Image (cartoon, rainbow, N blue to C red; front, side, top):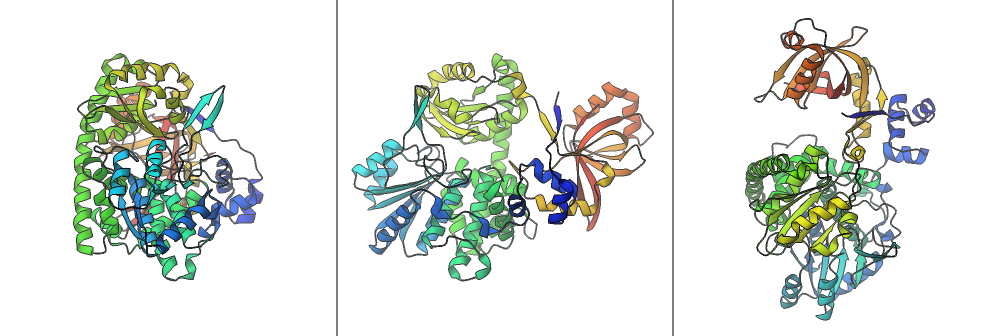
Amino acid sequence: MANWYVAAKKAEFNKIAQKFGISPVLARIIRNRDIITEEEIEVFLNGTTKELYSPFLLKDMDKAVEIVREKIKDGKKIRVIGDYDIDGVCSTYILQKGLKKQGAVVDAVIPHRIKDGYGLNDELIKEAKSAGVDTIITCDNGIAALEQIALGKELGMTIIITDHHEVPYEEAGGEKKYLLPEADAVIDPKQENCPYPYKGICGGVVAYKFVQAFYGLEELDFSKGGQELQLLKELFCFAAFATIGDVMELTGENRIIVKYGLSFMEKTENPGLKALIFANGLAGSRLTPYHVGFVLGPCVNATGRLDTAERALRLFSSEDEKEAAVIAGDLKALNDSRKDLTASGLQKAVELVENTDLKEDSVLVVYLPDCHESLAGIIAGRLREKYGKPSFVLTKGEEEAKGSGRSIDAFHMYDNMTKVKDLFLKYGGHKLAAGLSIKEDRIEEFRRRINQISCLTEKDFEETIHIDVPMPIAYGTMEFVKEMERLEPYGTGNKRPLFAEKNISFSKGRLLGKDKRVLKCLLKDERGYEIEAVYFGDTKKMLEDFEEQFGSSQIEFFLSGQKNRIKATIAYYPDINEFRGQKSLQLVITNYCF
């Protein structure tokens, strides 16, 4: 049973509304997001790229920029080493393109998911040395590669880390001792004594900040024009792409990055990004975080999962439209194939949970030896969604088991894994996601110990529905929907606002779609106001709940458009439905109760 909470945060809503020219309802929603001061409200509503923090606030930024300037001046060979996910590919592209435009002799390597695994390894360091590389710049990895960095330094190489992951630590006597690699410069907002105010940026944004600093720009004002700013505008798209793809919170400067990055993406001149948008039928569309997170992004991830992420990097680097169109088509086809494999793997995982004592665990650890290891993270995410529990999915590798985890807010994945780190051959991540490798014969011990230390309670697993404002359905006008756009982009940390009203009658309804997974219906409030609504949730369960509450005859009446007794409290948001060029108001029902 879900818990419904109505936000009750106090503020002078009418005063805020008057000052900023918004409705009191919008003022209340903004307050619910803990945006309190007038300065914070101004930035939230009207913030531009000029409000982004200076890259020089990142610790070691000055040092890293100076090192690379000297290397370029001396003609030294630089290699960027990234990662095979969206964030890794985008940050690799940002660094390589940004430095190449400044005359750097630079190439890029993205580790192969299966051959190399995550992040730096000894072979990548040795290969770089053999290829005559003088300087390695990591992106979206490196903070945990203490031994590999040490090897690189022994071989006489210069190494700069740009990363955003948690810094490894040892705990003794209740205190954490952080373990930083001995690199020439370490740029990571999560390291100790880094004054950068916003710690929640992804690897792509850290890489972007490095390029911005390298170009000597403390502030981004894209209205000024010029070749350098035009390049930084193109790269800004990829910083936004990475932010969404790595599921960063859309708060603070991340929200500004995504808001403007999406608008730049719609008009991008990058042949690869343009081709990817076209291949997915989104050319000319208003792009949202959904499009990047669930349509475009998975195509980039699919190549790193089933092939090599070098192809995604080649797509973004391509300057030939025909080549870009071919690669984009291949990436979409790979992603379509990945969907089928994921569905099969998820089915096996659910069967394991349902038919064994795994379902009693607070933290799910599921071993799928025959599953393609690249799909572990996606399946772990789906298990977390289905069961509301932290979930790890492990697969059989050539020498050891490898896997990924996806978590819930109540369980800090990286911190809890650190408590059992003696079990792992390698691990890394952050609060909500992690990766690991482990010997096959220690998987059961991992399952037992991670559950022993989880400290999760029944309350941590309960679904919580946060209502912003109890609001009559008649208030959701076209004008209000338009005003709500000022809260976008929506995503993690900035959820779409939810409203609620009691005693709503479900006048008539019909099931749509091949699998009858969409319910279209007419709603009526106690004052007689009627509006069309749609429900995209589990329609089968919804009708079962209605039947249990009101009887089967009422369901028949409801679906045949006859008068019935079905009433419920609904959580909803107003939206605009566009069909064949015609726009109409509708409500989207997200939850219901009796």
